[in-house]
Image 1 (cartoon, rainbow, N blue to C red):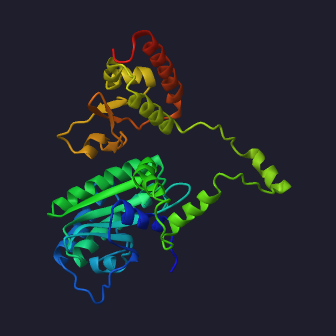
Image 2 (cartoon, rainbow, N blue to C red):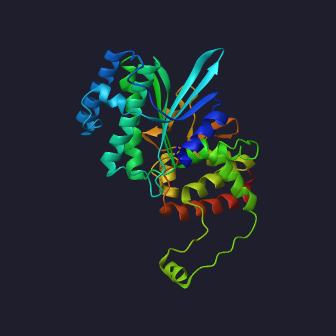
Length: 349
């Protein structure tokens, strides 16, 4: 059986990060022999979701699938995990993962969104139909989704939960991509590579193999043709991407406790951040403990703040993720001015 590296990564994530005792790759229901529960509700899910996205966004998420039985027969879950406690299934995770090096692409933007919505909706239908589950975690993961797809996709996925809640189903629909994919999935698994010694986990084994030689210089005999072909490539500048650069700098400053309190207040002000960084949102946003975390990251239906929470002076803050290269010089200039201000007036004034 062919195993994709992305699926192997998610297997390790479910086993060691989400602590699932049972994990299976490429899971399919036996539609011919298993009892299908809640068939009327499943039909309704298909009808309601199809109508909602067709009417609101002109999306045809089921294409040529005319019946729920046909849709379920085509279903396959890349990675399925069960977390068991006290002899009961405490949590179930159903994951589809796609790794497209140039960014998630199932055709054009519309076709890509339709495909992901179909996958996630069908997965929830499978869990409700064959496990008789009313709740669970439906995850679509991709290390790179370009902004033109990512933002409308997030909005559409956030509306899936509302459709299911209207049918008294409490499934969570989550997309892990880009920075969140790295923070929530990739980095935690990488950190385990030195402590896990299971030869069946191909992703972890590949990392362990890489680490064996990572400190050695690797030489390569290049042909004249390959050397010549590099002339037209874009030179590597060594700079971090602007989002990574901003977050790393802020993390260092905030952890040091050296940022003046009045500056923190300014960074929560949208107008100040527009004039200082050319940002469309406040750089910092104070966390409200009474509101769900993910809702606070949204602005007009789009995630404009990273999931990582920074704590300063016993207050918690989100950091804006909407950075572009045009903002780099503004941010660097601000860093320089802050350093001057700290030297003149001290840190917590």
